[in-house]
Amino acid sequence: MNRALGVLPVFSPQLALRMSIPLQLYARNFASKIYGASKKKRMPLSPKRARKGFYKGNGCRSEGRHTSKGGFVMDKEKLLELVVPDMSGFKLMPYVANATPKQKYPLAADLYREMANKSAQSAQ
Image (cartoon, rainbow, N blue to C red):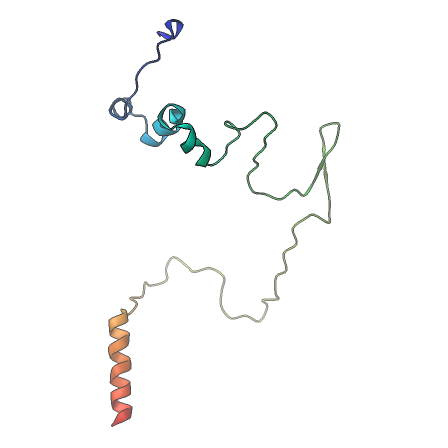
């Protein structure tokens, strides 16, 4: 538009709402123009704001290594091992059926009254 002249279009939250852009996207896309340097230092670091070699990842563990030819070799020592107990004699089922009737749980005041009545009866 007017970028050749060095003039950026002016965006506002009202304009973002009129253009049906979610406000979170508006704030994220224009964060560099809104926040100062001291605020940006305290924001979470992302690969977009870091240097060239920064790789954030997504919190998963490495279960192998990459080869020089572009392949991946799994390492059995690094694989996740889940230890599950034997549930053969267990009476409860792991899932709750949708047809299970909803139960109304008592309030704390009801439980307190019930305990007070029991203690009053045991005192007599």
